[in-house]
Length: 501
Ligand code: SF4
Image: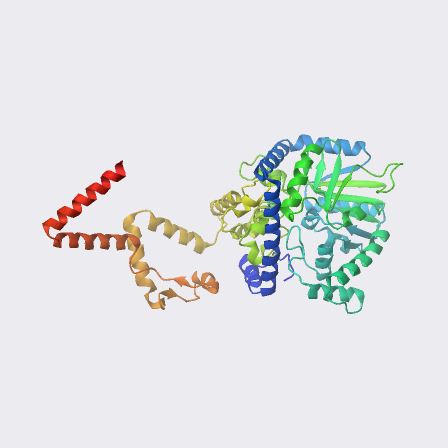
């Protein structure tokens, strides 16, 4: 599976994922480890719920005043000598990037991990212009060589094993490399070192932008973001417009929540703060710093009572690790850049082609594990229900589903209809039932029976069984001697008195 594949249906992508045993084991193993680490980190800090609430309040406040903080950030960054660009769409973000590349006559770019750059498909655009583009985060480097997209927000190559990585690296090395983590990491390091030194442009994402000082803050575990933002002479930073924080004090809260939620680390290994381009006394840093602030559907959520909170996301990936659906199917089944519960919301909400992405919101059991895991308490499960409701209201559901729901509505609207539906169901299922189950793979049962077997309707409903039991009891009572009956009534009366006390 090569990742981003909007031409196939969700069901097709899920089927491919479910048939890939290696992927399922790898995703389950890694998400389990991340989840356990996160739980330990949360327990260790003690008052995790208070931190979560503080994080939520900061994000709510920031997004409610996004225009103010964006303007403050832009003004402060410009004052520090940086260039600020606003891009309404992915196409605009790409066009701005290409203009900067052309002005610098750039031939090569090194990138650190950036989900928003995946969102605007900048790599393809740069490569079409003949600009060599190299991902320098190890996971991103692996999937770039494989021609794939990330399958997890923070662990892009979660679905690859050592042997597969060795195969990819051997092709680049021109000789066979062993499936040994230390050897493979050393190979990537030596290969990328040269790319850092040669690149004309360094391109980064942005974990947080601090409005009060116009600073960009990057969290990284590999140190590559620091190389990307200090060695090349020009730096381009792409940031989603919601990545703002008002102050450094707010960053302290996020720096507590993000690494713990993502991997269970107390601190990210490297936290870099970039305050404009290099000044005369600085030892390193770019001569020119461009920050592209990208909207691409985000501002449509502002003022929407159901979806504004999705902009609070700090992209920690904790909801993916907690999600029972993601843990089975991995990230590529979601079809776009973002996966897991946050992807199931962001994909239909940010994309304007609603028809194409509507079904992604169905990749959820609505269990709420994502909300429990989220460090800023985003109610993703509620949002998934809103998206499904809109899909129904705006006619984006299948005809068979609409018909099924209408029939169900009629059946459960009165006791009489419900009983009738049960009777008809029992008659209808007769030719299909084998040993109390319906193993057929036809019609609506096809998808269900691919991975389990549908139980047949019971011969008697609970209500019918209850009524039968009552009748039996009455019969037995009628057949009892008057003395036994009196004694039973006396005992029942005493029991009732005890309950009342
Ligand atoms: S929705 Fe919450 S848990 Fe999921 S990535 Fe965003 S901040 Fe993390």
